Every structure is written in structure tokens, then in C-alpha cells.
Image (cartoon, rainbow, N blue to C red; front, side, top):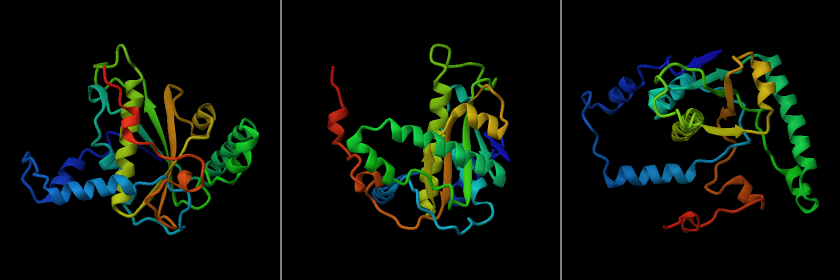
Length: 235
């Protein structure tokens, strides 16, 4: 099943109904609202261990509708969401991951290989919802505005939509895992999407088995966060 950026045009009206404000009236974000937003950002996690419980009907469509509120270069809305519900296609994607993950394992340094092998890098066996996300670089929407010199901004727009979906899901207690250890060409083949679409990532959604404000890779000893001032350069 394909859900494109055009499906959820009523998402802004939905948000307005939820807020109780008249249309086009800007909100006023107070200190409490900002604090909850910061808390949401801190508690967003890349989830790999899911409960098998299904999500309520309409949840995925609503979350994707919120993702479609994301900014896009030239208002191109290049995101394409493919709901992977077919068991055979899911199995093929799982096999693709296994092959790519084995190759990645063989490329690890000896002192990292054992740790890599212990990492939980996909939740495809348990997650009730799987969404493959693509960027439609052939879209005519937006008339090319803003992407002449940097066509990859279409892909960046889709990544922004993925992050919006991530936060919206987390706000509802739903976890999301972004699987990137996949062969893009094989994903295009498995899902039979247009060849000009660029594979961005495979998303697993469901209720998490446990929650934590520390990234799983940090807890596993793979890497740790660094202070923000380490990535700021002044000129």
C-alpha cells in the first residue's frame, strides 16, 4: 500500500481541530509547552525491540499525515510512504537485511566485530508496522524551485518528514526504528516502486518493550554522545 504526500491534505485542519483554535490563528507556546517539547526530543529513541501488539486503526495514517506537515524544498513534498503488509515482501526485506548485515559484520575491525554481532539492529520480526520511505526525485511538484544546484534537497526533505513522524509517534507512546542496513536497489525491486525513487529508509513502528532516555548504542558501549559545542565552528 502506498501513501504519498498527497493523501493527507487534511492534516492541518486536524491539528487545528485538536487545538481548538480558529484557522490561521498562531499558537502561543508557553514555558510548559517548550519544556514538554524538549522532553520529547530527549526521549526520542531508535527502538529495536517491540511488542507485537497491533496499533489502533487509523494510527499509521494519522502519523503519516502529521509527517506531511514537514517542510520540503519548493513545497515539492517528495516523500513516498510504502506500507509493507505482504508477508512475502517482508520476508524478502528481512533476507536483504541479513545479507547486508553479514557483509557489514565482516568489515568490522576484530576488536569491534564481537560487539557488532551482539547489537540488535532491526526490529522487523516483532514490529507490527513496516514502512519503506522513498524520495520521488522525478516529482513535478514544486516546479524545481530550490533544487537546481542541490537536487539532493529532495532527499533531505524526506528525512525531515521521517523525523517528524518519529516525534509524532513518540508523543503517542509508539516506538520507531530506522533500518538502513539494506540494499536500495533490492528494496526498489522487492517493493516494485518506480526506479527513479530514492530509498531513504525502512521504518519499524510499534509499542516498545522498554523505554530509556539513553540511546541503545550508547548503552551497548558502541558509541556515546558528544557535547554540542564540539560540532560548532565559528568563522
